[in-house]
Length: 391
Image 1: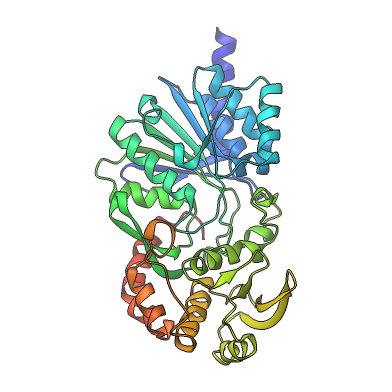
Image 2: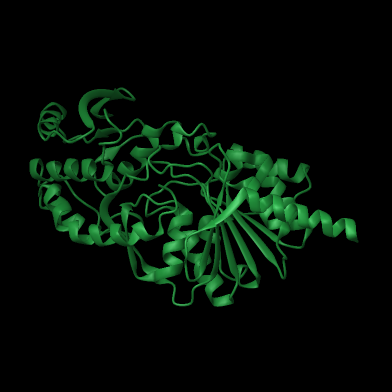
């Protein structure tokens, strides 16, 4: 008995040396690991959780990208949660051979995990839990599935009175990369810029402290030794997006572009080549390059033996995928008013400001639209600055 108490005391002292609490928030706590290497806090979370008194049912929510990032550590957490009667939910967007491999490996390791499509995550399972953990490596766009999961979990924890632990993860893009238009988060009646420059832990902190009517007991285990200015491929961590056929940072940036292009009748293929049978490629490229958009140039290329307009990123820090897409679509609207069309909804489920569609279809310079949004953007940045964990 005495030996067990000494062991618990030793672990508590050890963990307190690895983690220290920062920030004075009303409802939330943030723990910063003191590690000298960049790390997403999985080891610190495991140690910290093991010293805490766990009462009631636990639920651990993660995604397929987490399995690609660090399968063994994530499965180790699964085992600890399941051993104590908890539940594990693994979210995915599409099923492929790699996902099937993970499913088989979990069976071989004797660990039970429920695989769910993002769209199938309901609140009924969350409402049975007294403590929820989330670890969701993803892509920091306001239309991202992981952000929607965070909102759903915060709401469920608020209703149930459960505590929520967020195991934070570095941004894919530099935290200084922010781009409008705004996207509406309907549940909280809140808007975020298309690229908002916050980790999931920082966003959870802000939503909990400001927008949740009944805040939850939130704990954020932060990333150790992380600077928000860095891009993910500068951190020396494992790349986790091959599962989504995103092999480079250029592919990741162009995901934002592709989402907007899909709202029009201009086609953009997997090689980021713009095509339309009615498009004069040579003239279109000349006029696009004349606009001197930062961080990008356009050139004639062939993709699948069809000539089109290639997007070449020359400076990723200056490249604004939203501005580039909207300027490109706006030019197409001016040059081909009887051919070019936009869909009724902009982005997934019409999340974007409807004025984006108005500006593009009318052929306006999108720079002017950005200036109209500068006041709203400055208010967001002022609020955001209070909840940034990393500098």
